[in-house]
Length: 377
Image (tube, rainbow, N blue to C red; front, side, top):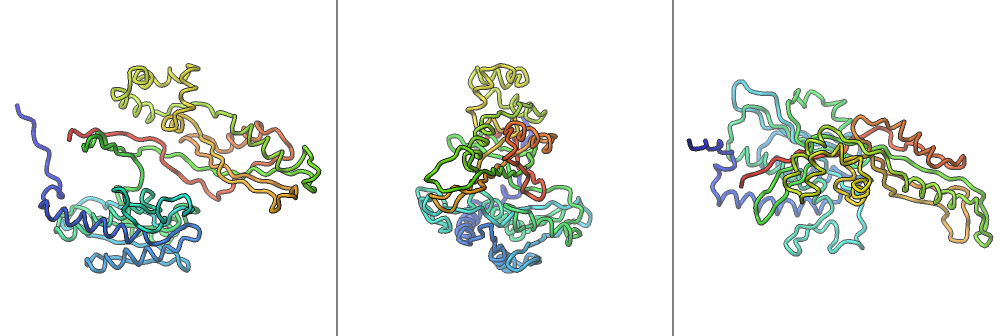
């Protein structure tokens, strides 16, 4: 009995020449978007809001702008359902700010939007102006192609995701009604794999790690650098960081990670495939534990992660400061206890002259694992 054909998607009904026009438009818009500097701090997301609003206004798509503090704001847009009765809304969520960048380490200026070697370059091209632009194009296509909708489609671009999350917090606190008790929300996350021009799998994030930022501060006897002393703050800090970086948080297998690795097992080499099929047993093996340490793509799925990102001390080379500090980006597996991990790190350091405290005002979530759906195309 022949297999039933899958229902055609709305985009599948759009003629090829028109799809190409949308593709060309997306590239042009993406270049323009990447040229908008929304480095956070300070953000200046209202520049991006103006970019979005201009297009939405031209397309006749309902939208509203909320500048909740000078230079920073959110943008909401909506395509209403066409059916008399339908489902709860779907939200397309993205953030407009990007992290800092050092132009000296880039092949092209980070806000050039330049196409080089077949790639489109710019800070935010992967996180997450690309997805925000894709969501914008979806809104435009739905409107232009007059697609019948059984639910409202809401576009929401927010400020300050990379630091304090104030854009999202403000919107929830002051404009919650515009979220309309939505049923689904699509945000960043997941990795897709293209092999030989064909999609091997589509990745969907289904779990989140909690970010728990810490500052390690060492205190010691200050003085002139011509007379070294072993109890200096920088020396104490280095010793403390050495202990922290040598410490390995316990391996832990979440159910979703177990499912993900078992799904991926058939696509891995034989030995790795065997481990993936029974990851709970594999992590008990010393050899496998060592392999996990070297595998960045696997390591972060199985343990709380600790990354050293910032350091500071004296402002002069010949001065030993009374204080030196370092920042740690800690990501905790779902269900983990931030306070317990902090206490463990304090025990690891074991120095009364070194403190370790949390710096971010709230716990934020970042993706941890991916469930991969395989395509037959």
